[in-house]
Every structure is written in structure tokens, then in C-alpha cells.
Image (cartoon, rainbow, N blue to C red; front, top):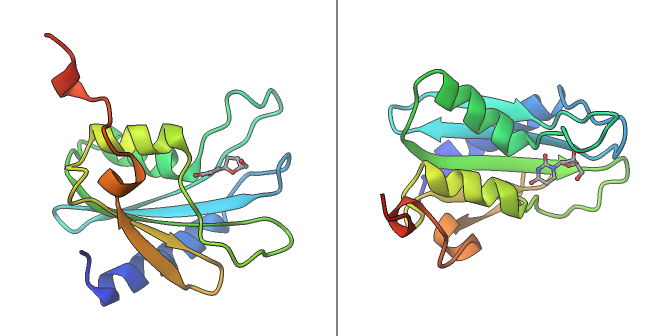
Length: 141
Ligand code: THU
């Protein structure tokens, strides 16, 4: 499990990244901060599109930024999301983002820090959020 100072730092960066969210259609703004095994942090925000389908979640933006820079090993991600009226809820990653996370981590060890706008959060492993996931081991290569 990530240490409290690390989780707090990632939540702060996710809140900052949320400022860049491009969400004119849902008005639900999301930020994420992804920690690599070597200690780097990649941030992301949701990026919507008038055609809806091409929209990208904050978590995947962070992952794709990192992977495109050569990163392959990750320890934790913090996510924060809220609409114009803040419900106070913790931000739960969508199923597609959980699947992308599973591609690049050990699900029993990867921490998903789900935060609200007040900086409060709960932490679950990816294996708790995506049990029995489909991955490379299921493909007969
Ligand atoms: N969204 C994220 O960025 N991450 C999630 O895990 C859930 C949903 C975005 C997608 C869309 O831009 C908006 O939130 C409303 O679904």
C-alpha cells in the first residue's frame, strides 16, 4: 500500500491536473496522477469531443502519456472527479480505464486512490476493482 505522504502528493497533483480538464459536454471534470516504479509522476485529465466517442478519460490520458514516454512499470494512480455540483463522492475509474491499468501493472500490488474534491480518499488494489481480469496470460501466443 502506498504511504500516506505519497497518496496525499498524488491526490494534490490529480486535483491540479483536473484544472486542465476539457469537459464542455458532461461538465464532469476529472484529474489523475500516476506514479511510476522509478518515482516519476504523470498527470492526466479527461478530454471530451463533440462526437462524444473520441473522448478520453483522465486515467487513460495519464497512462498513455507515460507509456508513450517509455514507462512500463507503475505503482499507483490517484483520481479525482466532480461535476459543477460537488457530490463529495470518491472518483471511481471506469471499466475501460481499469482494463488499461491491468495491462501495465501487477493488479494485486497496484493502488487506486479514489479521491474527492476535499482531498479525502479511499485506496483499493486494482485486483479488488477488476477481479479475474483478462490479460496477456489469457492469450495463446
Ligand atoms: N471520466 C474520466 O475521466 N474518468 C473516469 O474514470 C470516469 C469518467 C470522464 C469521461 C467523461 O469525460 C466524463 O468523465 C463523464 O463521464
